[in-house]
Amino acid sequence: MCGVVGIAGKSPVNQMLFDALTMLQHRGQDAAGIVTCHEGRLFLRKDTGMVRDVFHTRHMRALQGNYGIGHVRYPTAGSSSSAEAQPFYVNSPYGITLAHNGNLTNAAEIHEDLFKTDLRHMNTDSDSEVLLNVFAHELQKRSKLTASAEDIFDVVSRVHERCKGGYAVVTMITGQGLVGFRDPNGIRPLIYGSRETEQGKEYIIASESVAITALGFKVERDIAPGEAIFITAQGEMFTKQCASEPEYRPCIFEYVYFARPDAIIDGISVYKARLKMGEKLAYKISREWGEEHDIDVVIPIPDTSRTSALELANILGVKFREGFMKNRYIGRTFIMPGQKQREKSVRQKLNPVELEFKGKNVLLVDDSIVRGTTCNEIIQMARDSGAKKVFFASAAPMVKYPNVYGIDMPAKTELIASDRTVEEIREIIGADRLVFQDLEDLKAAVRTTKVPELQEFDCSVFNGVYVAGGIDEAYLDALEKQRSDSAKLENNDKYIDVNIDAASVDLTGVREE
Image (tube, rainbow, N blue to C red; front, side, top):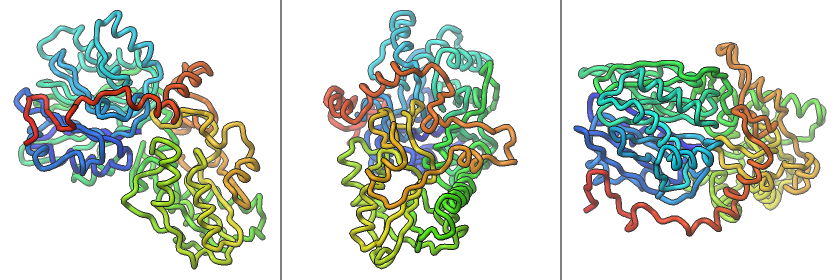
């Protein structure tokens, strides 16, 4: 999971890109990068850290130009070094920069093919660099001084043929324009918007609608699965479906956890979906625990479960209380590398309000249970605060399978629900009662009559059905060896950062003072 943005403007875009990345910060807190284009030159700044830490005044001044793309990352495939911070760049053809949200599932095969057949060098293990080089190679084969819209769309078609997995991409081609495209299943989100200015029409492409509306742009629509959008250097816009058999299968976890609640993804309100998740869960509790459910108070685990918990409490007719205060300066624990860091951060992030727990039977509501780190720590905090009984509810079903499309759940052994029953999980996390959402209820919560064509989703973490195909046990075993917490610890020292002195050098050679 990452956040991407691209802006084709009529005035300098550096501040707009910075603001957009700030709005997308929840999608990645590990690294950030912006590249802009001015008079045929590219200006790049990227590094590890939050947006506010990566970009200072001196960097913003150097990021000149009316076109640009940006990226916030948390690491999935590859390492968490600044060497793999995005956007990535290749100089031929034209000079291309790319920002990518998602994960290619056949990156290893393509990597080899790019070297042996296309004669292209890879400097990192990142699948995003692979994607960039496939795009660049296919564009180079056209051997034109100026690329037309049809050339670009043919190239994206070839990318769809060669690359498997989940990907939402913005790429900037120096002197040609801005391109955005989405995988044939639409697993990862991508939306575009526009606004009229005195100088002419400006366009924006972003992972979530919130980045578009916050900048004063009007959301036009979601980019369809397999579709590409091309905005020329002159400001003309073209769109085309580039996949032969696109199928709408967006990632359902976007609605459960990743996206901001005020986002609208694929025409579906994330907030409304989470309300309905709480509603469905309340009905399940009533069915399984009966009217005498023994719950005194419903307490959400902030922030993502708050919406679901409120609706759940309303339907059950139980008091809703804020029992945990959140420290805003601690990042999202789910995306932190390493179990120890996650455990430590949970206690730093959440502080209990003891009077809401003392002598009460408490139902804690979370968006999901992945590794069990958060809920185990929180249940213990509730007991330490004097709770009589601690019940636990997950607004999502049991996460049983690794995610391969750009969410960092690569190792099946790290998932608490893998090969375990509800009762076994309840014992491990230390709850008195435990309930999970049913998968069909989750799908029903997300579906809406406003988007009738969207009936199915990528639910691979819950049911093991990988919509883009090509995933077997051997692939998952190899993935676990590469990307589990222990593997990341082993590989951590093998990477040398691009910026050896931790100072930014942009593509034109402008150095930090």
